[in-house]
Image 1: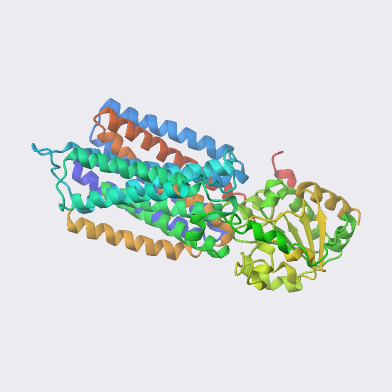
Image 2: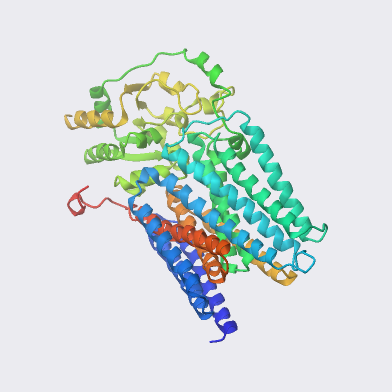
Amino acid sequence: MNTTDLGNLVQFAFLIGASLFAMGLHLMNSPASARNGNRLSAIGMCIAVISELVFVANSSPGIGNWLIIIGGLLVGGAAGLRLARTVAMTAMPQLVSLFNAMGGGAAALLAIDDFIRLSGQRTPEGALASLDGWLIFFIVVDVVVGSVTFTGSLIASTKLMGRLKGQPIILPGGRFLSAVALIVSISCSIVLVLAGAGLFNYDTETLDVLLIAALVGALIFGVTMVLPIGGADMPVVISLLNAFTGTAVAMAGFVVGNVILIVAGALVGASGAILTKLMADAMNRSIANILVGGFGVAEGSQAAMTSEGGTIREVSVDDAAIQLAYASKVVIVPGYGLAVAQAQHGVRELADLLEARGIDVSYAIHPVAGRMPGHMNVLLAEANVPYPQLKEMDDINPEFERTDVALVIGANDVTNPAARTDRSSPIFGMPILDVDRARSIIVIKRSMGRGYAGVDNPLYVNPKTGMYFADAKQGLANLIAAVKAQ
Amino acid sequence: MNVGTLINDLTVFVLAILLGFEVISRVPATLHTPLMSGTNSIHGIVLVGAIALGAAADNPLTGVIAFVAVVFAGANVVGGYWVTDRMLQMFKRRPVPKADKPAE
């Protein structure tokens, strides 16, 4: 077949691939069809990749080129498979970050390669033969966004793995370095685009230096942007980096003239943008505020003053078990502390026991429970909690008034009624789970330590609240034994 | 880049973003993690571009760039789909009876 015909056929295959991506995402609108959706999307990917391989084979590249392609596929595929098969569900956020880094990095490399190719085509005077403002624009945006995503996601992943401290890391002069890196990167990019549009006359070497400066600036900015961001803000950061990767991939599509990259990048970018907004709204903070970083760092000193104003009532295991065993409706409110203590299976076991007694049990999941959007749902699904029991915030909040016992495990800020009532609280306005409206509340908590926001939680001094001080896993085990004894 | 191509590509880009907003805003919060990991695999489509780089590589520098790009994108695609599938198979209406489950 001649190259043009084959090229058209490949384009058509890409159209099918892109459609399958969109249809696959559509099927994600329900847990019942989501798995098929993902498979549909995978089929689209296979069609696109195989078509590209056929197209490449038709141009009969050298053995070295085949080595690069097949070798790269084998190495990358094996590494990806290994990671995907072995990763623990608690470690999903770092894996997703890692894949973000790889996608963003690969997209940036595509643009760098294209730039090198352009640089290679010089006129005898040393100027570029075919510079063009739009092409340079897409190259530069791809390189900058892709590089920020690459280092930013690697840092996020490292922080989530616990290799770096989860708390905000404030480097001396970090904010200054961050600003300088960003300014250098953006101004070099602008000069490059203007040069591409023909407004300046630069030789190739200068353009190379400018691109390298933009690249290095972006790589540094990725690091300094994510380092100061604390653990509980990770859902926002991961979503944002996801949106960045999508953008970088779409830009790569413009650069190499490939429509399926543009479509896929746009879909991912839209998804990342929606999730970023949802997460930021769920914390009632602007994205800029999160990126500037350091929740609780500034307010930490004042928070200590408000700790009196009520007494804490401790509840014994047996009392807690009696309350649960004779309730008719129980809502479990799990927080990230539950996952840290690996107590998901314990919580499901308790829920099974209660259900066997005819009690209506559901789970109230705050959007930012966990380290990435929806994380808590996956952790509970892994523990065999049926998904119809997993309730979103807006669905469960009206139900708390009819709830006999709200059992809070490892969640703090997302249950803090001060967010509703206390205008002076740093978390005022954050949407919360209305746990305090339940008839009684049991909180399993290790100590009276504060949550991520560093503020006191009036829920704990509410007369309806019984505090059970224990590690989530051990506490649940005791509770299970006590309920069985009822 | 000629203006015609640019306009075509921009059209596709803008429509795909609108489609993305439409489709993704219907995904329930319960599935946000698989959604993100699923879209992550979709952006692994850069693999197609990376393969093209591999075929066009004609010197050590572009060869290394292409190889790294293929490795990254390949890991992204394979790992992304696999782990998303692993997650989604856990979402069940009712748990499987214990007897059917492999020992943990």
